[in-house]
Length: 259
Length: 171
Image 1: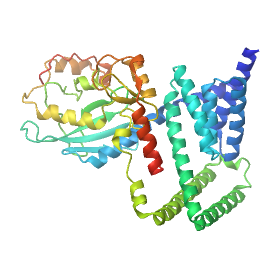
Image 2: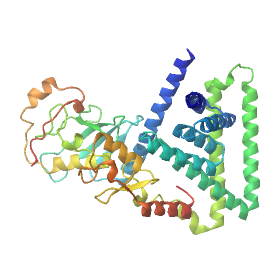
Image 3: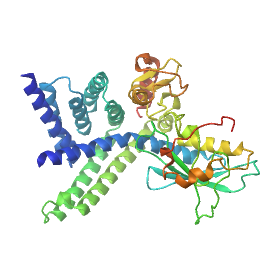
Image 4: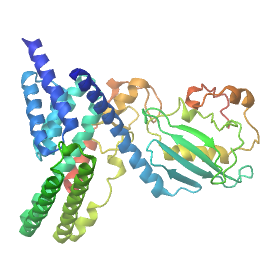
């Protein structure tokens, strides 16, 4: 029974992955999420399935539940000593970014109803532009694969996100002046992993007292079992979670609502 | 047939994700390189993320009056593996010498432990360039490595394939 489940889960997982690669519009992410959840139902300890579900949910604008799934994926990947832990870490940062953006949006629209209205208007404006673009290419079969179409579509999409970012910026700075300048400061170096240059997600400390991102230091130890800073011998069992740094990262993200 | 298409798709996704992590780090490194404005080091970025050049100037050393150019190639396994660094000539920009140094071969290959076993992933392109500048600045011997002719005659194109013997710690 369990082998049948395994095989079925594998198939759902593969289909989800294939769709992640080929997805052209948001509708696909629905299907990816469905496939991935089906795979999880069948085999509940599958890191990849949680990972794909997390990606899909991020794209579907549900960053909070996406984050839960990604954390689960990360734990499972670490248990099986899987290299994908690095990618999952990065996706987690990406999703936290989306979550921070979403929370910020909600905060602005609570305090300023005009923001919500303008946001909608911009959305509608670009939807009509995209519809017009589609109608222009309609005569071609499989026009979605056409490079001209894809280029114009990408341009529109970029302009759209840029406009929304600009809009948010304007309302943000009206919300509170000193806050908006604070947001532009880059993340301080002490919460950045010296190997991946990303903000820490699961920091660990070595016997020499240096802190690294777990998935990245493990990858280094596979080929070279030494501490990158002191070059002393080091193995995976000596790594200890650095909770203080993790709290610092959480505090930084909460305070700035940005990564 | 469908399975073969699927496996090839899976393969491309896999490699995309692997290089994505490196890309993030490289972009951040290039940004700091451009902003830092190190004295005497001028990075030249290319459209290829895995290839860049840097012009190095040496101060306070009579042996090195020119500007020297290095070519830096970033391997796929970066930052777990060091970049490949070679001194080069450029007829366009009038850079026509490879610095004379007991650890630099006349074909531009560099015998430096940091480019081999001493590399660790916390090193950066930035720190590497500073090391190169300092090994030149601190040198007083106007000579090539003793085995220069022998090495250059049969050297592989990619110096990372050479197993250098790091014999001299004093230079």
